[in-house]
Figure 1 (cartoon, chains in turn purple, cyan):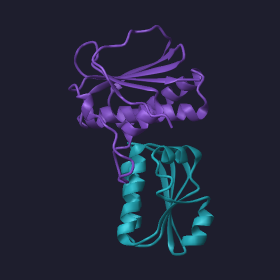
Figure 2 (cartoon, each protein chain N blue to C red):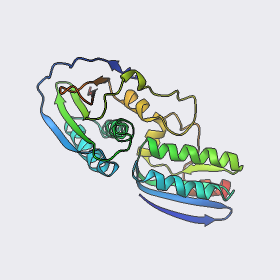
Figure 3 (cartoon, rainbow over the protein chains, first blue to last red):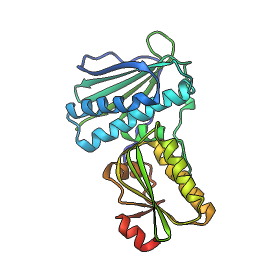
Length: 153
Length: 110
């Protein structure tokens, strides 16, 4: 299976036009993930994804949100995150923004799957499912923005 | 996530149902590890699992390792299509012993 390599960039891609299907801003908390999954799954289907692909995208976005909750904010309450899904010309783009300390993308690495142990799978899922994965600094200069693209054949 | 633990023959069957996600996987982990510590074969019936994420998968991996340490069998059964997909993405579908149905698992381990 094709596996996207995370691209490390500090500049934003051009903001292309595209219909915004999901824009959710709220606390970075585990209890919100179910609603985020439902919204992202519905958006993926509206973009024309097959059911199985939509399920994969839901998993990738959920794992990205978990990384924000568990790692960017370190489990501390009060942090916010924004999930946005846009329809693009050839698929969909998901951006996930947080306002935690900016994380060095070089430290975000999937672990080897040959080593069977609990944990560390989330980033692997994201890279395996999405076609493009970019770690950016949000326009305000603080926090983190993960941009994920899924092309739909 | 809902769960049901039943004893069938020698085996303990843990049926998980619903979403095994960041909110519920700590419960799944606790339930599974408690069963594994009894030293009897453990079968996880996953027919009702509508969603599982990396934290849920981690609970299964930790339970498998706990079972190996305790010297008891640990198997997954009747895995729903969405859950099987995630295990496949994690390349763990060959690490776990997987049975088509709860009955098939019990025929071997019960």
